[in-house]
Length: 138
Image (tube, rainbow, N blue to C red):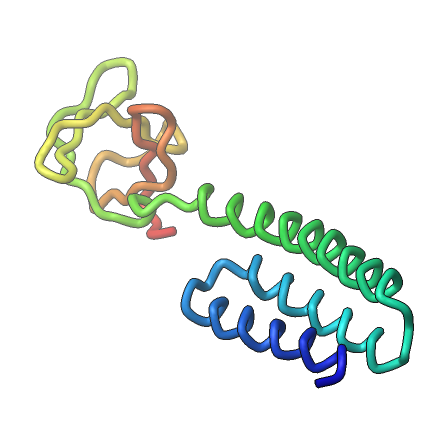
């Protein structure tokens, strides 16, 4: 068997493992093995094959980490409570509100402060343990 066939066989094995795990890191390794196989097809020495493979792993992992970091921030910023209706229990003199949401009482603040006290309120944001309410569903 030629040298490149080992590289490509290893790339296929890693690709199959990636499909089972879904982490994308094994995909980077598979691409790197394919790059090593391409260097072997071009009849480059084993040292250059390893250099191509290492460069592909390092650059692919760096790109993947930057991409995943952006994805995690988008998901972490999303709140499942936003847009949910709440039942207003009491209005306080300072403008704050006590609401019933998910079977518990919560402190809330209407936004803007001069919001009419009638109608349905929706959660606009969560600030710590307090809810921000609005009349418009976000």
